[in-house]
Image (tube, rainbow, N blue to C red; front, top):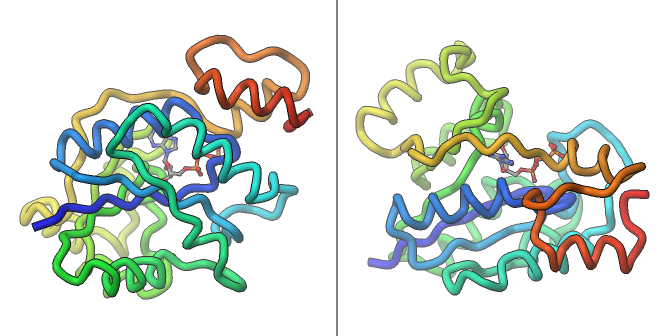
Length: 202
Ligand code: ATP
């Protein structure tokens, strides 16, 4: 059976934290493919001026070029209006009816899962891999998720990745790029070059 991993994000910009957890995701759950899904119209984030999807898509394409397991889809960019993970998963289900589908989340996102469209149905359709993040402590799991998460960790439909913490966020990278150069190791060099060429985040 095919094992497909889906990784949705704003990727504004994509950083090495994303790439590290996607590698751990593929290694630890034995995935054939991790599909990166740059968001078109994120509805969980506060309103702010976001880099156009075209740039975020190309930066993601540059960032994933070195790992043959990594793929890219514009599935979440081309749909009209707000894009919900629930709908994305239905699309992949239809396309790969016999595959086992995994969804990758940072632990900060996991703590908000109960606010997602049809989350209770969603979690029956996908397995979830969680990458730990500093601001997503599992001891602070919201009440709404408690019973489900306890059971899901027991039956293996939710898995906490062993990957170490990568303390990198797009927010921190955007803030630095506004007035300084970025230190090495935070984003792939090809992405840094693209950002410079297009004058992004200034
Ligand atoms: P921002 O700072 O703009 O909120 P971000 O760095 O969280 O961005 P996103 O593109 O929003 O990046 O993240 C996509 C997914 O990847 C989310 O589930 C998020 O929790 C997870 N993620 C991002 N960075 C990390 C990291 N360093 N460690 C673990 N998970 C991460």
